[in-house]
Length: 113
Image (cartoon, rainbow, N blue to C red):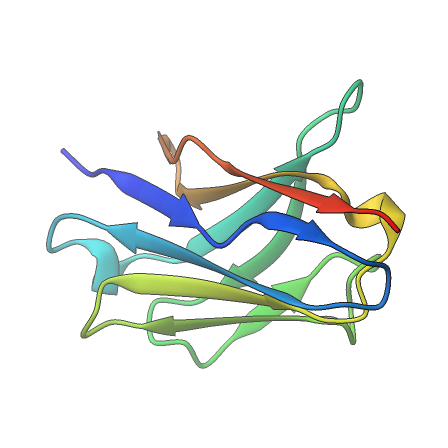
């Protein structure tokens, strides 16, 4: 059984930055691609960023390219999402996902002045 725990959300002004973390239990973490998703109120959950098991390959949603960076530390069983130049439309609950079916409970990001 894998457990995922996100942290790092909060309230930030437009243009600000946050770094989200997701710590995973279990030994399979280092073997798996990891994803960050987000879900804003009234909207569907969307894939934000993906990182390969070794961290050498990443992909991003067009809406966050150039602003967000996904990374991982397999020694710490942790995946990160560095979010810069935040916009009000980035406000959402952000979820860590170990595909296909392991999810964290999410961390809330608010972007407002």
